[in-house]
Image 1 (cartoon, rainbow, N blue to C red):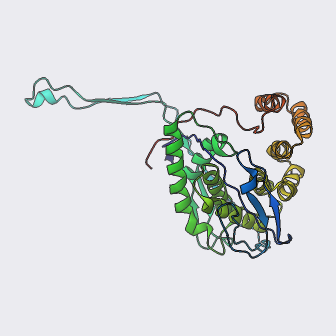
Image 2 (image 1 turned 90 degrees about the vertical axis):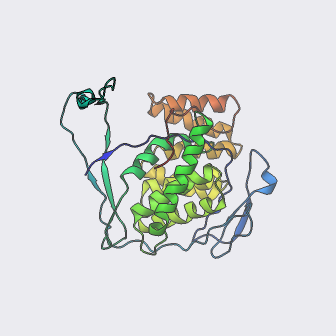
Image 3 (image 1 turned 45 degrees about the horizontal axis):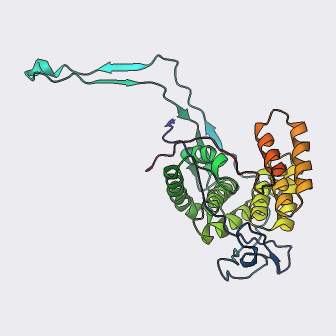
Length: 323
């Protein structure tokens, strides 16, 4: 099975909603959330079974999922390898031979065709309910992540911001029935969490923040030692103001070898008024990764007295409207 790549993507957002997370081990507490806009109106709550109260005190209905004792089926990746051919060109029928004069002969050519891998993931933990083709979804997430994975997101223009917002809406609606199922697989939950986290950063509403927190927490319930899931949860918590709770997940992601978690820890240090700690962490990371240009920009942001290390130019992508 092959997929012709139908879109590339970019993302811009305006405001970051406060996110409420829930942990089975945490007591019901209330922590003030620093905000670049108004820290007095945003709060971060960690509780067990409390309903949402307002947009500034949003909280997911989350119960920790039981760890998965049976290994889930691994995603199946099918790589299409087209034959090496030259650019294709064809000439249509000469319509003038049929008695029609002054009619141009149609021509067509195809070049620079690109393909994406077919990715099939299990729908449920057991894998007995079949597989889902997430090829285009994964391609979209990969393309737009540099632009909207963190707050604040960046877009080359407003059209790309709008197109990305609309595609996030479509994809989250599509994956929702699978992710909300009690036996949803880790692979489904992780993708649903990523999409809804993007929606949160794109200011699409508190529902996205709630779903993102719920799905990533459930994903960790399925695979507690997933570096990516721990990073994603920690990132969402700290960028929403839950520095203490989020740091636990980021520290675990770092221990599992997830480098980007260290950058999120630096962002958390910065928003916690620990500028020297953020700078030390980024410089240490740069010493280990001397060829990473992003770290140079992030270090300069901190040195210049700014507060968001991801507020840097992102790749210029082209998200097309429609399917």
